Amino acid sequence: MGNENDFPDRRVGRRGLLGAAAVGAGALSLGTAASAAAQPGDSRPGGRRFRCGADVAAAASWQVFAGQRIGVITNPTGVVRDGLRSIVDVMVESGKVEVGGVFGPEHGFRGTAQAGGSEETYVDERTGVTVYDAYGATIDKFAGYFATAKVDTIVFDIQDVGARFYTYIWTLYNAMAAAAKTGKRFVVLDRPNPVGGQAKGPVLKDGFTSGVGLDKIAQQHGMTAGELARFYNGEFMTRVAGKKVEDLSVVQVEGWSPSSLYADTGGPWILPSPNMPTPDTALLYPGTCMFEATNLSEGRGTTRPFELIGAPYVDYRWAQLLAKARVPGVEFREAYFTPTFSKNEGKVCGGVQVHIKDPQRVDAILTATTMMTTLRDLYPGFDWRGDAGRWINLLTGSDRFLKMFTAKASARDIVAAWQPELRDFDRTRRQYLLYRR
Image 1 (cartoon, rainbow, N blue to C red):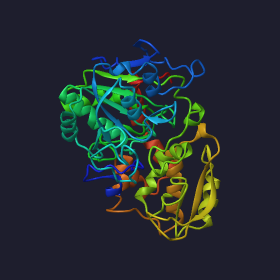
Image 2 (image 1 turned 120 degrees about the horizontal axis):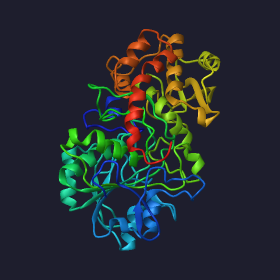
Image 3 (image 1 turned 30 degrees about the vertical axis):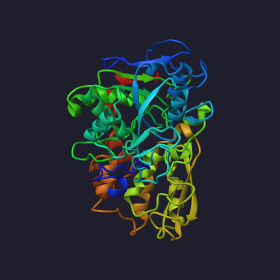
Image 4 (image 1 turned 90 degrees about the horizontal axis):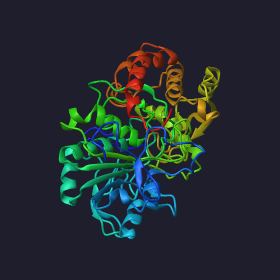
């Protein structure tokens, strides 16, 4: 994607470029029988067993969708814990939910496509439901899909990884805008943010929107998909769609706190995309994905993407210099690898493997920025991909990173430069949060 996902608008993808009307309402925590509106902070770690929104809704016999014909935006991560089966399969077999269509994001509903790919529109063999190719779908295309599928309610259930350039959150954004325009109900079956609830990194600026960043959020946004939906509705939908989604609900995660990481949940890790194999990958991804904008391999074509970083011109000196930098939460091992596809395919690359030493102290964006500045200072061969650093501008959301980097600024100074805008973003998002920070 730029998520590991590559979201074109189909013009600029990362690989191509590389029920409540009120905003504050709509959070649902469903019991095994009836449901009541839950207030922010209802998720109590240790107080209840961990359950994602889909599990909560399934335990309530899918009552949240009673009398509705639904369209589902999901992928292989959209499962119920009992049996790890797709929510679409379970809904259809239950006979209690009328599924009018499925909308597959990057990599597809069943997950058969690699980065930058999708599954073409087809009829799903198991369920008989039409699956529409929604990767890169515009607002108007989504609206057309909703009309064709004759759906009343749009359901979103995908495991996000917390980074602005992971394209699923922009599928959510465009689908919400289409729902607002067409008067559809929108329900998010929520899942944890695997990298926690803290926002980090630069906020996207005007002039730097693309398929890997359609609007102004931080590089590591620190929200669940449900919280993001509320944020989008309150901050963006009136401008983008002309009005808000009038009926937006979130079925909350139970037994989880944003101070926790995914490994703390005890839940199974289902790859959200082919190059996101572990929770450790997700923890580093908001930073090391920036290497997609360079001439180094970001580890695609290896078993540790976004953890193994290197290039044919890199040697042992990089690991030595990084060890002296004392980056919190991580340590660097000198490593050599040969990517089987993507950048530097078939070439021996020198570099490092980023090892997580203390997950709670990891700052992925500081880590990657430190890695880049040390590369700049060591190797004349370091370079940007594409047109004069355009990709790093899109990934970081402005041209500031590139300008400071080129001016030989330190990693700490680069990170310090975006702190004021990050504080503003953090203040704005607080009113939309569902889980106590």
